[in-house]
Length: 284
Length: 284
Image (cartoon, rainbow over all chains, first blue to last red; front, side):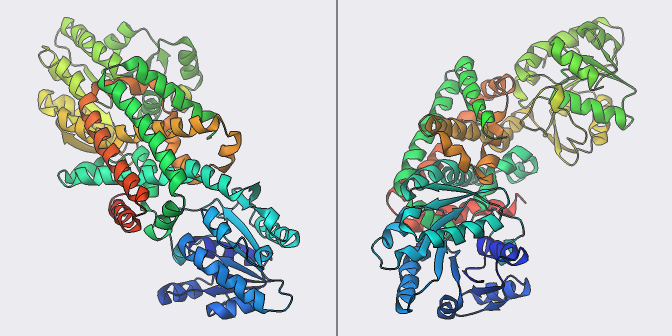
């Protein structure tokens, strides 16, 4: 099997490592526009070859778009156009993006829609680029398959095998449910971290040594604030409506704390914390 | 050296383990009101003996209050009263609490003020109780000494040695600066986590399987929401004014994101994220 990966960053690079090591891919073709990243990807042996975009589509059995969602939305119709030109094309294209509705809607009426499988492997770190790629990144995590009824069942099976090789648990849902859920369990966490970083950095202008004090708790809460704008701007733009709803709920909860603290109302603060503690049921 | 520890939970219990193992304390006397915790502390061998409060004060060279700050504020004058009754008392009392201004102000005019050293070892986890105690918890972390000019220099030296045994970096500042700094690097992180947990738990009422999706990023951001109300209610009450200021700044930052996303203004979102990324300078 030849797997072509467009974007050999954290996600694409980590897939490359495990798909080859675990025998799913004989050959990894990489596409990297950025020459520094391309050189790093070869040095790190993420791909067998770095090839031009068109060549990747023509030679790969599976094309993986592991790029920011804004770019993927534009690229997907073009890849399907390439498939269309080929007689009896059996190639498959997948994406790994964190929002699904726009990318899926953009090709809904494409004649080659069935060759596309929409997936979101829910794994990552706050780092990016080929240097961030690592083995075993996906092990034990969830991978969402969106709108599989619009894909060729045989293509879905092959992609299920791909993610099974990565030891991921498959979950199936509609693109629109996906975008609601990820707003809650992923997108808002990033925004709260960004806002926390901005709050503390504001303060740091006056008080240089505040960071001597940064505890483990602060570090873990602010960790996601290191995440890249290239990845997150398009996610937040594309998932705007869901994200706004979650931000509003979140600001309301912050205000409940603010008001209870402002009123010196320890009992209300206690109730809020006890309610929040119920997250223990879910997060180990 | 006999060290008496009032409260053998996460902080007190972890101090007990390392102070004895590393030879600073020959004997650890523990005070535990809760009989279940007392039994657990003995089973876990955190203390040599569990003794009544008064006996602990009378026998210990150093008394450590490792209890919620609300209780500590009331207990400290009583401990100093005990010291007062003893001729030429050389005992020392310290606290380990996360807010400093109220506890320090409460004994400012006490005749035995010099026997108290106000400290805050900046270490912990989201767990509590004797079961949460662990070796090496404090290694490499910062310990704040507040208002040391009000303590006997010899007592400060001994307590510096205690924290040096725990491999902590000492930092010196006023109680009021301490409370500002910790509002930024610790207290706000807890509130943002509590609010995040409440936001997601609200949603879960309708959508049971949302947590199948919880990614590593969400888990790390929400981790502190497991922290106990017993510890955090008094901290937030005592540090009310600083905490309110930080919450307000934080809500303003959230609104910057909200408005930029609402306006579909990718450039503004990008600028906010790039600014937040500067946290990389400080948090590894």
